[in-house]
View: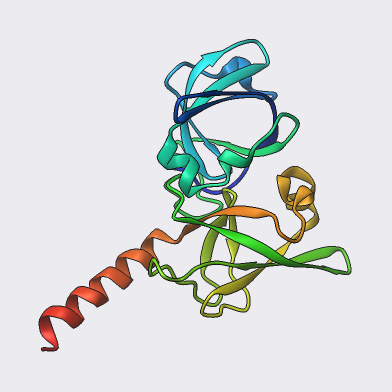
Length: 201
């Protein structure tokens, strides 16, 4: 479980493809603190450390993960948002994030607003995912508040700290990002569907 509060943006140093899998090596400041089998969110995707060195570590993304996220587009030199799993006694500064990406979205607009930025994202609502005004969503693993919620798009306001310490500063129009919709909202929507199916016949 994660909170969506990114610790830092790591740098991809190596990509190795093996059949349908992809081994991703990343350099970050806390690599020497990691342990084999430890879970880390990468752009919001929970992956397991399989190898480590002094300042680098390696994780493996399987085919299904690559198909449902933007990890398959990574190249050496790219920035990846990193967050280690949350401790039970930690303050929940963001919101509950599972590290299970629901789908991707495309950045369609970036607007600077006197020291902050507005990012607009469009996504396919066909899987049944929705946003609500002022609700939570994880974009590339970053816990954010939804602004201008629409049927298939929304905006996020990004403060300077988030802009500088995550890969939001690298996003452009057309960039693909990972989305994890709010787990509480997903449960409510599912219960509403069950209620409608069984009790409104």
